Length: 405
Image (cartoon, rainbow, N blue to C red; front, side, top):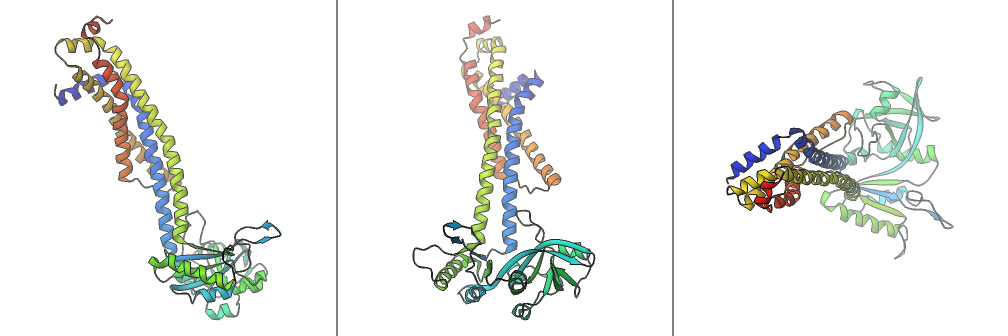
C-alpha cells in the first residue's frame, strides 16, 4: 500500500469523528503552545539582560565595599567603611583601567518651587557619563573642580526633571533643595529608561560624591567604585589586578577574606542568566507535562479506535493487507494527530507570546530551535504513544476480527 493511500485513509478515519479528534489534539496543542510561550519568555528575558549589560558597558567593573563584622555580628555586603576615595585614585593607576568613578549614594526629598519629589541621590565623579555612555540632554555634567570643592551642583535624571520642573523644561541655573541643602541645576541627563530589573534609571539625580560624603552624610568612605576597563577582552584581568592592589592597600594577609568585592558585568550577567534559565527550565518542564498528558490521550483514543474498527481491520487483512500495513496505518494516524496538534500549538504559542508583549510589555523571543524541538517532540510523541495501539491492531486475528460485534 502506498504512503499516499495510507495518509488518505488516515485523514478519512480521523474526520469521521471531528469533535473527538479535536479534543484528542487539544492536549498536544496546549503542551506545545505552553512550551513555546515559556521558552519565548525566557529568551526574551535573556535578550533584555544582554541589552542592558551592553548599554551599561561590557567592560564595566564594580568595586563594592565588603562585609562588616563586629563582635561576631555580620552586617552584610556594603557595610564596611574601608573603601575610600584614595582607593579610587589608586585604581586609576592600575594597568588596563580607563575610567574610575567612586560613588556615595543616599535618598532625599527634592523641592523646586511648590513641587517636591523623593528620589535617589547618586554621588559620583566626572567619569560616570563616560563609563555608562550616558550623555546629557541639557547643560553639562559637573566638573573636576566641583568634585574637589564639594560643590552643591546637581544633574537631574529625566524623570526627576519632569516631576519638579515639567517635561521638556530647561531647568539649567535653577536652584532646588535636596533635604535642607540648596543645589544649582547644571544639567539634565538623556533618557535612559528602565534597567533589567525594572528600576527607572532616570529617577535619579547626580551630584559630586564628595558633596554627599562631606555635606549630606558626613562620612569619609565610599560605597562603591565603578571602573571601566580599557579593553572589553581584558576585563577579567583588570579586575584581578584591582583586587590584588586593594589587598595590598588594605593590608589583607594571605588567607584572610577581602573587605571589598570586585565584580565584572560578565559575572553579573551570568548570575542573572542562570536564574532566568532555571526559571525557564522549570516552567518548560511543567509545560512538558501537558505534552505527556496529550500523548497519553492520543494512545487512549487510538486504542478505542482499534476496538471500534476491529471488523474493518479483519476485512482489510482478509483481502490481503499485511500486518505491517495495518500497523503503519494506525501509526500514521497517531502521528498526524500529534503533528497537526503541534502545528496549531506552535501558532498558539507564537500568538500568546506576542499577546504578552503587547499586553504586559514583557520581552519575548521565539527561537527557531524552540520551534524545531517542539515540533520534533510532537512527532516523537505520536510515534511513541501510537506504537502500542498500532501493534495491537496489526496483531489481530483476521477471522476473530471479522466475528467481532
